[in-house]
Image (cartoon, rainbow, N blue to C red; front, side, top):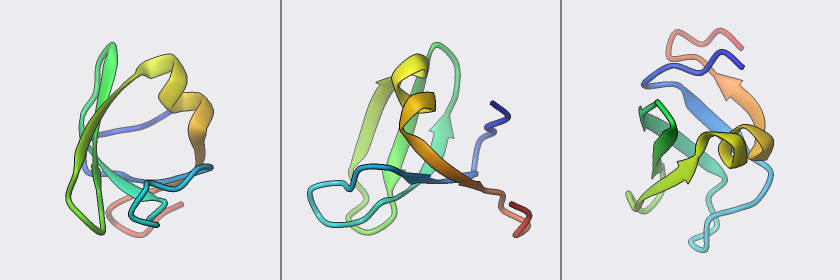
Length: 63
């Protein structure tokens, strides 16, 4: 999966605040994601994060 820093990820499940879009802050063995609504930052293992992604939205609008 081609995910880079500053990409927006639309996830299958929503964050408890109700938002399902997250911004990628860091990639590696773990992904650090920031909720676009409340700003909460979470760390997910790469395997779990890649399974949970529904759509990748690139910063320049390319999907």
